[in-house]
Every structure is written in structure tokens, then in C-alpha cells.
Image (cartoon, rainbow, N blue to C red):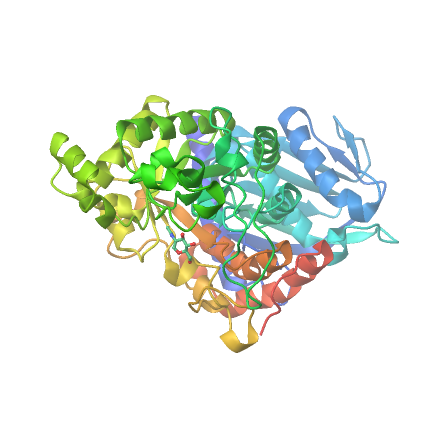
Length: 540
Ligand code: TNX
């Protein structure tokens, strides 16, 4: 009974808080947090952080508190002291877990700043972590510097913030398959996404241009498949080479680093198309394998057609790969691609025709679907969920599948209405590899036109999804496909500030979204990105 009463109070507080925030607005009083918190109440005064401010937390809360100390340490030149209990009379930043806040969900939190004390409270550690990210953004931008600043006396405005995300899946996709991304650059990218409260990083690990994850059972995948020595698409025609892969130790380090920042790494192992690098390493996976095997590996790259032949041996091969992938990635969701397959090659291939007849499949769409279902059953048996691009709807959707809707929203709408989980990732609003300004004045990109305002305008729940099915929309994800993105500087240029807009789409209630107000906050936010050394695209 008491529990229910507490929950009710918390919900009422949240609703009232949101109303306060909407009524008074946060413009002009320098609460420039991105993504915008659900409820912000500005109070009188400030808390001053100095070198003698201490942190107070215990158990799992202390684990999070150390992350605040670590994030401030570069600019402070030292780590704030952490204590187990509140020292009488001293000013402190205090964090603790409180079940009473469970109505705010696993990622919600409350942040109260008073002149003598800052308190972050949440039901779960992730909430404390997001409270910390908000607190960091209440500090002056110098707090984000990566080198020591002279005087640490940072005023934090007094506020009461109650906050929780709109969506559980707030993702970004990176594509080291096209241009390899060095491990250190990937880790720095995770730091910045966590600051924006993203919680999913999909890593596109395999494609025609490269296989980037060590698989112990099939070492040729990286020995040969990570070394495509030509590069497609740069204005000067040359561009850096695309060699490189992550060892299994690298992957474990990346996964742990991300988990420390409450980011789940979702691996994507592409199949049955976009598998050129695997076929170069193992011609037996492809169509007409004899012809390809006669050529030396370095000449196979342009010949593979990128499409595997879904023989039983090929199914077993990719399931072996997924077995190692599942050992490395604790993510519930495992992405198997499934997009853009040029399945006409199966229609016209004598061997595949025989297989379709034997399996009683009426066409190549059904063969595609049959193949995806083998993977779905396999992943389900291991307690995981298959995710695929919306092409997996054609020919019949696998029972356990989650759909990522990229060719517009239709796939997502159909899948959600049929009771499947979906993540919205349409080219129209979430393709951060598209141009963000006039092509003449932007670095060469794949095409498209996706300015900041358009990203911000996105609503991941289209009206065509029935209200009782809307909960199947897990959230939203932006894609940084790597064909034209060869350096970490360029990656950040394409990502920011548009990813900041997407972060707000994923976090903040759509009814109260306000682009002008967002841009006002962004003008302050980019000072933080600058201090962090993130090469964002300047605002227009
Ligand atoms: C389509 S999105 C692809 C990617 C490309 C991207 C370029 C998707 C499922 N497939 O392989 O990199 O377009 O914008």
C-alpha cells in the first residue's frame, strides 16, 4: 500500500513538474541540458564545486559516483574525494538508490541542487548515471576540458530536476566495416554518446568491404577479410586504406567500456547479403564457389556479388560465428542485417533452384525468409533476440524478430501492428551519413539531405501504429554509415550536432519539443563539445 502511494506521489510530481517546466520555460536561465529533462524547476542560489567538495555514496551508487569524479578529473587535475557518509557541516554531492523512484523507470532520476548539497537519487544505477550527465551539463563548459584548468570554483544553479526517457532504445550505429575505426576512437565516441544519454551502440562489423571481428573458429575471416586494399569514395579518389579488425580481447574491452557508461553494444553480423568479405575469405560460402576459389584472394573482392548461398553448410557457418558473437556480446539483441539482398541471383542459380524445391519454397523471397528464420530460431534457443533491417518482413517475418525500419516507416508500422518490436531508423530522419547542408560546402557524402531541424522534427511513433501497439516501438536510432567517413574527425562532424537532436527525440516528450529552444541550448552545448575536442559541424 505504502509502495503504491509512493509511486502515485512520484507520478503526480512528474506530471506537475512537467507542467511547471512548460509553463515557465527554461529559456534564459541557463539550464542548457541536452537532451532536455522532462521537468526542471529553477530555484534560488547555487552550489559551488571546489577542490574540497566531496562525493558521498555507498555500494552501487559509489560505483556511479566514481564516474562523476573520473569525468571531472581531467579539468580539475585531481579526483574529488569519495566518502561513505555525509560529513557534518560539509558541502557534498550525494548519490543514492531509492526504490521509491521506480515509477521513473530504470533510467529515470531526480537531481536536486541546493546551496549546501547536491543529491542525485534513482531507482537503478543507470538513473544515477544519467543524473550525473545532467549535473555535468549544469557546470561551466570548462569542466569538459581534457586538460587542467586554473581555478576550480564552479557554480551549479539550484534546481530540482525530475527526468526519465521517452524510449528505452536510443541508439547510434557505427560502421567500421567500410572504414575501420580504431579502438581508441570508438571508446572516445562512446564517451560522447553517453553524455547525450544514448544507450545502444550498434556496430556494423561485417560487410562487402571488410570483416572486422576476430572469429577463432574461422581465422581467415579477418586474416583475409579485413584487408581490402582499395577504397571507394573520396573526393581525391584515394583515401586511407581500410585494413583492420578487433580482436576478441578488443571486443571484450569495448563491451565493458560501453557497459560502464550504460551503453549496450549491439553487434551486427550481416547476412545473407553484404557478406563479400566473408566470401573473399571463404569462397565456399558464395554462389558458384568453384569459379571464385580459382582466383587469388586479392582478386576476389570485386567478384563476390556480396551474396552467400544459404546451403545448410552456410547456415552452420554463420551459426558458428554467432556462437562466438554471443559469447562476446551480452546484448539481448543480435543484429543479422538482412538488407538489400540481390536475391535474383538465387532465382537464377541452378543449385539454389534445387534447394528451393526441396524446401518447398515458392521463390527467392521465401528462401531469404527461410534463412533468416534459421538464425532467429538459433538465437532464440540461446535466449537472444534477432534484429534485422525491414527487408526481413518480405517472405514472412521470423517469429522472434525485431525489425529496424530504415526504408521509411512502413516496415516498422507493419511489424509493430503485427505485434513485433521495432526500432525506427528511417533514412528520411536518421541517416547521419547524408548531407547536412548544401553539398558544395560540405565534405563529400553519400547523398541525401538531412539538416539538423529535420532530425529534431522526427517522431518515432507514426500515427499509423495502433495505440495499443505503440509500446512495440522500442525507440529510435541514427546511422553513421561509413562509406564516405574515413577519419574520427569526419565521424564527429557528421554525428554532431545532429546526434544531439536525435538524443532529444529519443528522450524528451514530443508534445513539448521546441526547435528554437533546442538550438538556444545547443549554442551553449557546443562549447562543451569544443572543450571535449569533438569536431562537430558548426551551426548555421
Ligand atoms: C543502405 S541501411 C544500407 C547500408 C549503406 C547505407 C548508406 C541499410 C540497411 N543498408 O549498407 O551503408 O544505405 O546510406
